[in-house]
Image 1 (tube, rainbow, N blue to C red):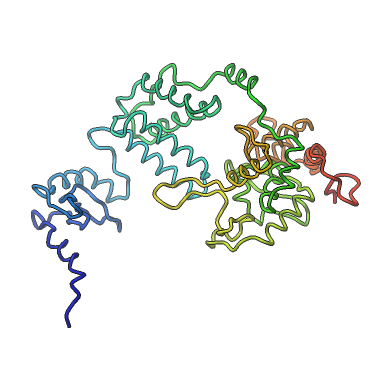
Image 2 (spheres, rainbow, N blue to C red):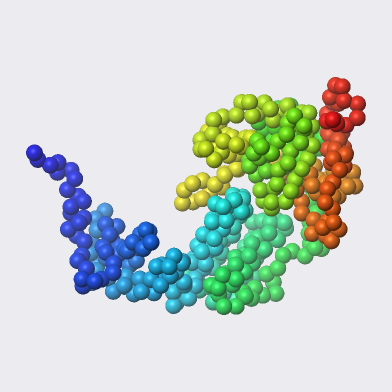
Length: 417
């Protein structure tokens, strides 16, 4: 029986491959045009034996085996024991630094130690480093004037608060490089690469429009929101939840019969416990009752899922690792629909609003526990437990500020048992 001629291309590709230059040559020619070697179950690529011309592989002079062997010898010691190869003798360049840093942060995100939002911010930072310094620029060649120009570039696109965060994240990248042994000395950023001063921040705050929602605006949003978005808004203004808090909230964290949520913050791991309003409980029950089927088993325990059964805040599972914040996107649509949009005001502003309003209760410790804020003071080490009445007082005050109608049959507090 004749074989189909349509499968002859792999044979041609095979015939184009060069022979090993000598019998015990450690590398093999791959169909991609590179020399490769499988180490600890993973395929590693080195220099090319061919380049692609017009969609076809053409062997390069000398087949590139000497270059491939040189790279392999330089990296073999690390690869065979499972380590990431050290920088080449030419020195660590900006691209390699950024790739190694993101790989380390990716591992932390995969293990749940880092949120998708924070990883996305780190990726923006490394992209900016490469755009400003160039991918092949040696880290050892970076000087204070380079960082001064970088700060100017950041300030052109970001405001005072984002500038401060951007400067800090750049410092984090190079601090990580030093502690990881990739550079021999701490980076010298120069006198100008600093966060904005507290005076600058105070002046900016004094001239900026408030980024809080009024009680009337929140009531308008609640009236127009879909059941799921309404649940998230209530969690934000009831308990100070943020975007990722809502997206990662597990059903086991809720005690809807008792009216409480106990959910350590995904961002920091700090303990958080807060009472739930009757409106929040009712909205959560409806959201769970009508929740879409999860696309993966690991998402089965989440309170909120998109119509595709995925988490509302996540990272795309592709080479770009782009962040997706459906909470912020959906809320932005609602704000535009209600015609109350303002620059810099988004879903996270609800958390700011909760904190600002709750501050009038003057119980800092109770507010911290509701929001999941850490307290590094000496006094905090001696506080073992906070009475529920203090947490109820915070929630009651914010609910009263929002002017929600008092539930029928409740004379003192909204969920007193």
